[in-house]
Image (cartoon, rainbow, N blue to C red; front, side, top):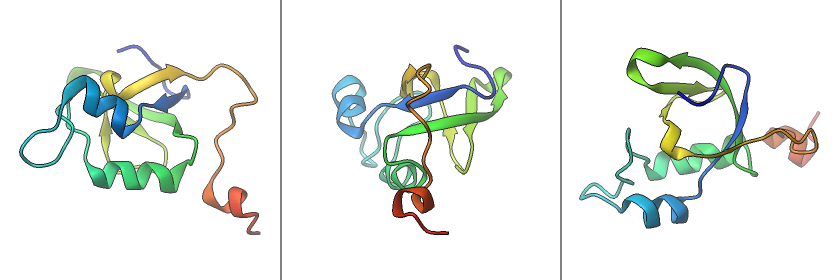
Amino acid sequence: MKYEIGDKVRIKTWTEMKKEFGINGFFCIDCQFFFSEEMEKELYEISSNRIVEIEEIKENEEKYYMKDSGYNWSDDMIKELITDPKDKIYSRFEILDIR
């Protein structure tokens, strides 16, 4: 596993994963754990810039759990580790400035 708890990572776009892995008969990206349209929708609700924080790791199953997500994520879905402090994770409330 490439990342650790607390790491902020950017998830690849649907187009990037489709090009890399293709789509199966269930209209899911055919990567390690499958990437579905529902995951794509949830990802945009969590973070419009596709940056999420790793909250838990199941190393024996090779999957990550991201903060505010109900899905399993794998190394092949992750584009990059975010190290620049300017790349902050914004919630939809911060984006809309709801208090």
